[in-house]
Image 1 (cartoon, helix red, strand yellow):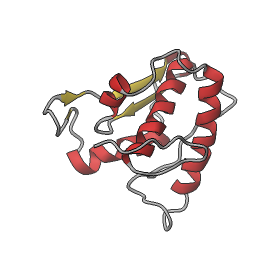
Image 2: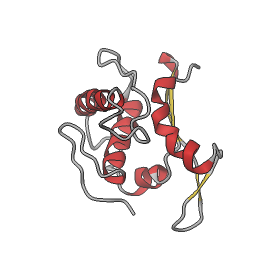
Image 3: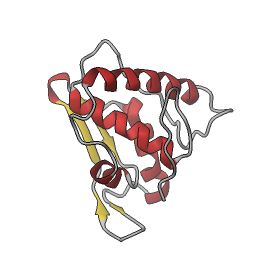
Length: 144
């Protein structure tokens, strides 16, 4: 299965802060946090998110799967990917520690519900954690 290297921005925090450790320690309660894998085997598509706190966010803060329909998730992801990629291509104006690489997301490809759900929630998480707003995003406070 090929791993899209264009999504490596999602693992930058791990590379910089944790020197590529395979598991992360949550500073609040010292529990190990496993990476979140987003995959669609039929498309040979996989993203691995190793951003500290995302697993906890997905388990405790994110709306449950099925709350949003796939069309909604795809529309949000399409808009947020466009903004993300513009920022990734403009390193003098945006933090390259956050926007390391462009995201290869084709709005004409059906990645399936799980991929769209987890990517959507990563964008929500990143907006909160990095105190940023993507186009049309709902930035809803800070994650400590």
